[in-house]
Amino acid sequence: MAKLEPEEYLEFAAAAASAALTSSRKFIRNHRYYRNRGDSPEIIHRSELLELCSKLRMDLFGLINLLEDPAKHRSPFVVTIANEINDILEELHRKILFFEPNLIQGIIPLIDRQRSFWNSFTDVSFYNDALGSMIEHSISSDVVRIERYIHKLPEIAQL
Image (tube, rainbow, N blue to C red; front, side, top):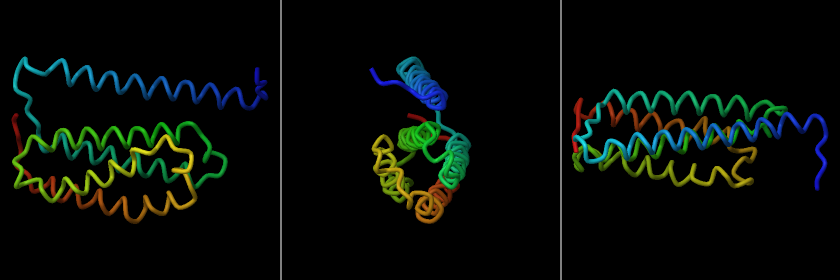
């Protein structure tokens, strides 16, 4: 059995807590989604989508800050935040589909591009030196464009 050094205990405990937090948040989200299915029609508000974009931006900035600090670059919270970004993009995609197809045809490719990128957050090579720069430039600009599209959507959509 591998022996951990004392300073590795904290990192291991943080990784375990991070994994538990990540899994529990997914379970809560999925429970809410499937519990509401069939009982009553789900209504999506534009403000919900904008709130998701705000969370997405905050998580992106948080990840940039962690990536810039060499001591925290290996932190398990880097993976947790990347997972949260991936989850937000999935939820945004699911909720945006409530709107009319002609209104969302420009936003779906942007969200899908980001989802396919963030979907590999569990790959070790994902966290390379260029990730912070990519977030600052191309990823952030996609998020801004997504928000612009959302601002043009009707206030409410119902399935």
